[in-house]
Image (cartoon, rainbow, N blue to C red; front, side, top):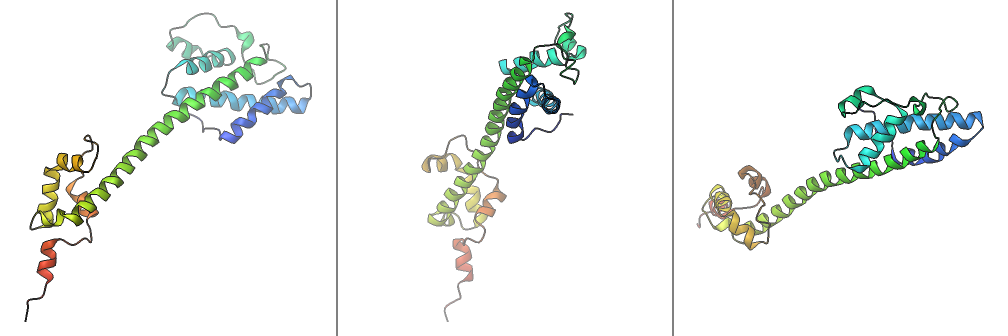
Length: 210
C-alpha cells in the first residue's frame, strides 16, 4: 500500500526545508530531517505508482537505494552487490555519513517523476474527457438529424432508431464524425431523443376532424 501523495504546494515547500541540511541550528536541522522523511516517502510512492519505467524512475530508484537500502528490492532487480551503508539514512543528519547533496538530488529526481506521473494522469483523464466530449457531440448530431429527417424515416421511433444504427457509417460520414466512433446503444439514443416528438406520435395525437 502506497502512502498518500504530498500536495503540490507542500512538495514545493520541501525544497526550502531541505536546504536546511547544511544548517548548524538544531531547530533547523529538525525541520530538514522531517523534510527528508517526507521526501523519502514521496519517492517510494512515486516508484510504486508510476507506470512509465523511464530514466526518471531509474534515477529516483538509484538514489533511494543509496539512502534506504532494501535487500529484497535489490534482489528483485537482479542486483546483489555489497551495499555501502555509509550512505544509509538513519533519521539523523548528525549520524548520516553520506553527501548531503544527495537529498537535493533526490528532490530534483522526484520532481521530474511527478511530472511524468501528472502527464500520465492527464492522458488518462484527457482520453476519458475526450470520449465524453465526443459522446456529447454525437448526441447533438443525432438530435439534429432527428429533427431534420430522422423522425420521418420510419413509422415508429423504434424503427427510426434501428435505421440510424444500421446506417451509422453513412451517418458519421455525412456529419464529419470519426469513422471509429461506435454507434450508441439503442437505449442511449432513446435518452437522447427523450421528449422529442416522432411523426407517428404527432399523427396519433391529432384529433379527427368533426
